[in-house]
Length: 113
Length: 107
Picture 1 (tube, rainbow over the protein chains, first blue to last red):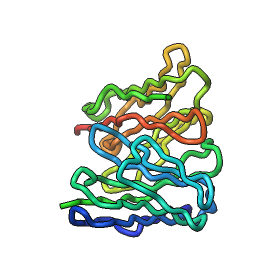
Picture 2 (picture 1 turned 180 degrees about the horizontal axis):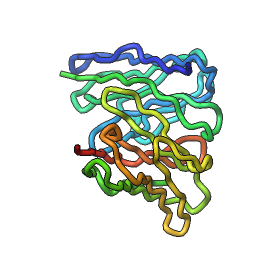
Picture 3 (picture 1 turned 90 degrees about the horizontal axis):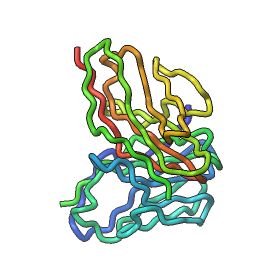
Picture 4 (picture 1 turned 30 degrees about the vertical axis):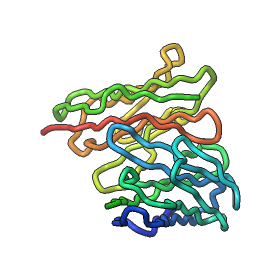
């Protein structure tokens, strides 16, 4: 069974902390994505990567960075967490091209207090 | 930039009633279109894609290029269809999602 695994289901962090959200896929997919999901706003793309060590900004990259040192792992980093980053974060992966659609992880609900 | 619009944030119907979730896209070319569904406490998953022209769980969606729409339809809604539905469009190598529609099917 195809899997995208996000390391934490729930996280609570303090304002100003550096936060790491980890995502691992076991499908040898080239593409990986980070979205945040907020009610009424849908899914908004933060960053994506087409290959190892490659990253591209999405629609809302401010306050975030990413790392992709290995093909199967894509990390989202909040350099200094703020309360407006409280959200559900979804990781996804896909083969090159999107005819097969994306496979999503189960999400990490981050609360910044 | 491409844009996907789902005009209804919430759609409430009774069991057995027909349901239509609206989706409009803005792209002058030939996009690939998808519907994703998220049931309560489950991960987002692909429901159907227009290139397959398939019916999944009784749902169908037809691409109307003239109206730039990809509405999701089911003739008889079931309670287990209650979920969040997202329309998505691809005009390159990544998907753009709409804001989502929450479908509630009442008994």
